[in-house]
Length: 163
Image (tube, rainbow, N blue to C red; front, side, top):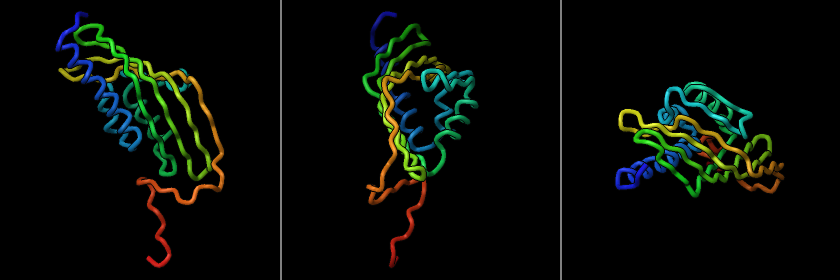
């Protein structure tokens, strides 16, 4: 597709879409995240080991896998490579760095991956029609007793003595 202001505007909209995806994922707002997906969206997480078909299935999986209050995630999507392939379709590759902490199990995962997405414009709005990643590396760690304090907005902190 030829370049121009419309293509640049589409690319910016897609970049904002993926940034919202990461933000809503990390803040556990899975239903809102579902609104970023097409109804028939597909996913292929963990190099395709965890695949899902349909918006509802993807949202249910994410909520089940990451929705517990003792799980905290950080997803950073870098270096977007967006190609608008037609007036209503695009593809994208993102470099991901992620961290997952499961506090109650003293577990931490840190890794990088390449997200490969497909996008479709519906009623003038870009949505994700496919998302998934292939791992570059993944490091799983046992968290020791070195954590002095752990807080998250998803689980209330116990009151300090004397409060």
